[in-house]
Length: 87
Image (cartoon, rainbow, N blue to C red):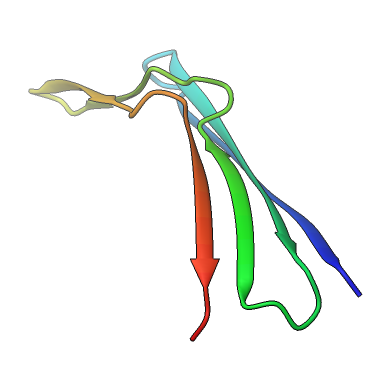
């Protein structure tokens, strides 16, 4: 029997500071499609990371005397083709 597997991962993050009226949100979707025939040592996988092509993550923090704003740049959307052979 052949095996075809689809796996996905969704992540949603929301940061909100009500007292300073700021908010930031970002989301990621990744997926992988894997195929392997029965009793075959070969496996083929096609995967895509950051499907929504999120560019950056912004975080703000505040205190009585300090305001911080951080921006983290995210690796752009990319895909991989993986061939696996089990010995």
